[in-house]
Structure formats: C-alpha cells, structure tokens
Amino acid sequence: MQNFPSSLLNGYRNFMSGHFERERYRSLAEEGQSPKTLVIACSDSRSAPETIFDAGPGELFVIRNVANMVPPYEPDGQLHATSSALEFAVLALNVTDIVVLGHGRCGGVKAALDPNAEPLSPGNFIGHWMSLVKSAAKQIQSNEVMTPGERQTALERVSIRNSLTNLRSFPEIRRRETEGQLQLHGAWFDISTGELWVMDSASGDFGRQELQV
Picture 1 (cartoon, rainbow, N blue to C red):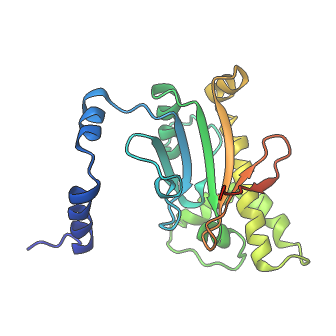
Picture 2: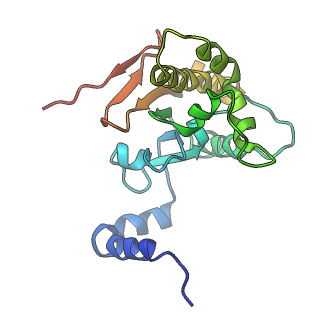
Picture 3: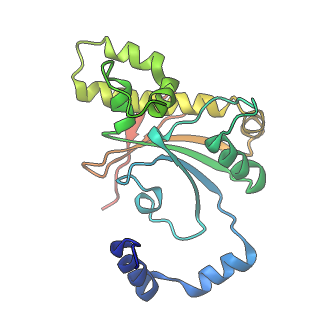
C-alpha cells in the first residue's frame, strides 16, 4: 500500500511537468554545485529562502533550524548539525556571503520569551537550543513598556545579531571576513506583509527594503 503523502506526489508531478529544468539539473549533477551564498534560516514552513529570494536550483546553500540560530564554535566531539553544514559551505563550497535570515512570528523565539513554557519532550531539545538567546530574552522580558509583539520582534532581531557574533567565533569565517573573502549579513522577513528588513552592518539597525515600482 502506498502511504507516501499524496500532496507531495501531486506536487512532484507538477514540478516535473512545469518546473523541472532538465538541462539545469543535468549540469548540476555533472558539474556539482557552486552556490556563492549561504542562507541560515528557520525551519518554519512559512519562511523558505528559495521562495523569498526567488532562487533556482543550485543558487543557494541553505541551513535551516529552529529560529535560524548559529551556535558558537565548539569543537567538543559532539554532533553539531548546523556547524557541520556551515563548515561545508565555507571550506568546501567557498561561499562569499552568509545571510542569517530571521522572520516574524517565530515559534522558537516565542518559546524563549515565555518563562512558563512547558517542555515539549523530556529532552527539552527546543528549550536547550533556545538557551543560546537566554540572556537577551530575560532582558527583553523585563521591558514592560513594549507590547508582547514588540518584544518578540525585538528578540527575533537580536537573535540574528547574536548568530552573526557566533559566526565570527569560527576561526576560518573570522579570517575570511577580515581578509575580505567573505561577507556576513542579517535580514528579517515579515511573514504577514512580505517585507524584507536588512541589517546595517555598522549600526546593527534593520531597514525595510523598498521595492522599485
């Protein structure tokens, strides 16, 4: 009995009949991938980088995890999925740009701001993961002037800056950025409006990107 989701099979048929670029995929298969941009994005189904940036196959190397976070450099012998993918993108693919892409209404960030949140599992994997922004979350939680929505947006953006700081803890990334071989960027996508806000590398402020009409 076929238990594979029918929605995926229907999507695959549509892909093959209308979107499959045969020559492009053949070239990628024979010559390999050579994307110049790495995007670190959230696993949230509403914030797919390939969709947001209208990217074709082979154009972006994407790492997705809860709340688009980067842990600090810790070669401790443990399993590090994000760090290993990051290592591959930088050392094997030689990407020239890394974008940390956050988004509005992030469930992981919302959980980090809720001091009464119950663990989803005995391992509390999300809780441990979101401890990467625990310090910032505590500071933002205590701000009673801001609304809950403002606090969440604030932490979503602070988390992006935190991930950029952690990226620079990787020696090879720090070296390549210092030598001008690699650039780091922060961006935030508003799911409800489709707006893209890009972080100014000097000030850390986020500015909305204006669309040319």
